[in-house]
Image 1 (tube, one colour):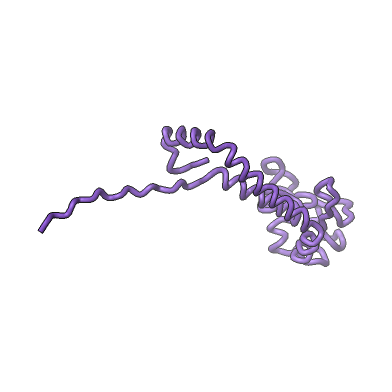
Image 2: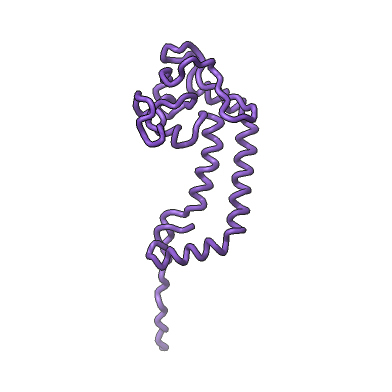
Length: 170
């Protein structure tokens, strides 16, 4: 009986832990959604109302954010009215005419509308902005990936030389 040939074991390629372009695209799409639903970027939504002092963190992100419905407010159902002096109940985050409702009720510290109702109203008001922004952002990143293919390959090769190729990829 003939001996079997010893096959070399295939070396499995480790996948990079962080791909920068898809991460940037995800942040950009999330920014479109949070701007139109909550009135701020994803960082403001997540970290915007962690304490009651005004603007104590990096670029004022850790204090109350006027016109931004935050994650803390979504969970507790109470709005920080200290951040909303002399408010009329409607905030326009862009000059494009979209309307963002961030509080409905008195300025006593709570609102008559639930956070889910406010987000629902913002969704109805800004549905077109969300769709157009998401489509254009995704299309822009697809085009950018095609145009920047060669520079990305060179940057990835450079990252491999520095030993970061298994951790980060552009």
